[in-house]
Image 1 (tube, one colour):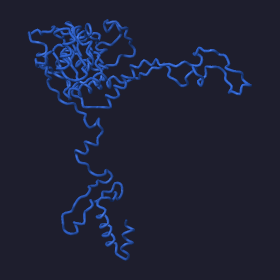
Image 2 (cartoon, helix red, strand yellow):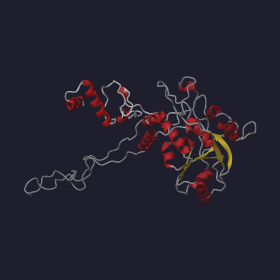
Image 3 (cartoon, one colour):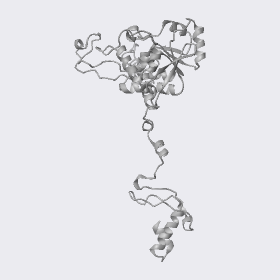
Image 4 (cartoon, one colour):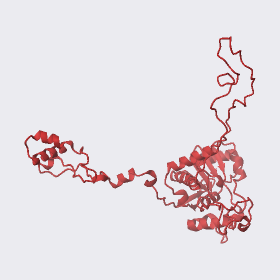
Length: 383
């Protein structure tokens, strides 16, 4: 550009050449590149400056860092994971009965229900689940496995046809299949923290969309398919995921009623969520083994019988909750007992089992199994 301006000016001085260059830059209006990496460039000023008007800023350059971005622009250009790291504050969620009436509220933990949307995490967990459940039994027969005659189709010479060895070749009808599928294991490892995070993100997105319904009890008034259909029409949605599991009396501590005579749901709404989760974790899990105390919660038999003939109503115990089923369902319906179990399971610390010890599968004491004292073993909350 300087050589062009010098050639245009002929015998002009250096100052006239610079003025010509500046006029050329004003006509280009912001198309000039950086003068040099690391050297700050002055903003391009329009020709109105020469006429005495206020200068018009076309761009604002900051040397090697490029154009200065606005605050909202910087937020949009960040990576999606950096864009929304913080968890949302989640308040109490209303609790309904079977007929849709509000009967109380339940405290929700933001670590389970307040996660920001992370599509990549949910995608990875869902892909891991679908790969892990593949049977991997598809198989074609190899050459030595195909039971067919080994007779030579025709003589080697004299027929005018191409020479053939037997009927088992891949080019023969009924022969082998080259490079066909063979039995294999499609599963691959995925960190337990990622598995748990995928479930938390999926549940948080369903709550954010208003597709979470908490019911005090999922025991239908009558064990009939008609009652289940009416419940589905009242809730709305094409696909329902019913998560139900009554906690055993031993795990509850005081049963359905607390010692003070207050219902468990009302007491939980008044108790801070962290204290409630800590109390539930101590009540649900055995301190000596770190495993679930008593029998695992299972859905009520009346609910299973009433919903088994209704399509798109899937019933699941709380320990079986996973990211794939949550994403696949339109609405999540969860009982109050299942909510307590899910929140405790998805917030307990993940501790790695010591390498020098092997768990024999029996619920004995920690010392008998060879584990160090005070190290829980279970509660990873994976899908």
